[in-house]
Length: 297
Image (cartoon, rainbow, N blue to C red):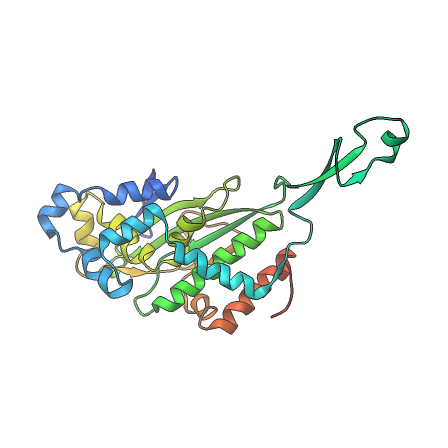
């Protein structure tokens, strides 16, 4: 984990970057720091938030974080199927192999009298060598964002990732939580890599990381609680007000979020996914930008 502590306009900014989701889960699963536990006890922000926002316990959420949430992938697949994405020949190539028995004749070898004059056509996947597309997803959200909208947004992102990779692109995804404490005296910024360009899409794990409301309501809160500095928690009011989620565009001095596709937490970002039609419109626009061929829906 990479850590940065610095000041932004007189406020304390704490940045933590996890190498991947596994490292973040391991960090979140630790017992709370003794000083924090002694001060605030076991009834933490996670306990308060979990039942109201994702319909499960802390342990259920952490299990899904570790093993994946297959339902999230299934939702995104249904969305992709509605677009009837045309993959063309970008991911599949044909390779001909010679044999004694096959589907067609190699006339040159046949006329030369070679016994291995037949050919079989084998389909194989091409290695992805295309451009890397970077996606940054703010996984924080305001309390008034509905569970359904969280799921819809995540399913759209996952459907887009799958479509881009299927058509030859390589996709990188980074997730972050940015929030400020009471009175803007401090900021917390926790991030982790969800997928590197060379990695295949782990369907179930991405189903949790992008689609499940528990990603923010449980994992994001628990990571914040793990800060060992009680004085920082007092300043932030972690266990009283829980702070407030803000967009990265509202804190330009934060660590960079450079990306090809940025999904934030301001009203316009969430309005994109307010219903099925607006969500499909966003997906169609992304497909057009990156040249993914689809049949119109």
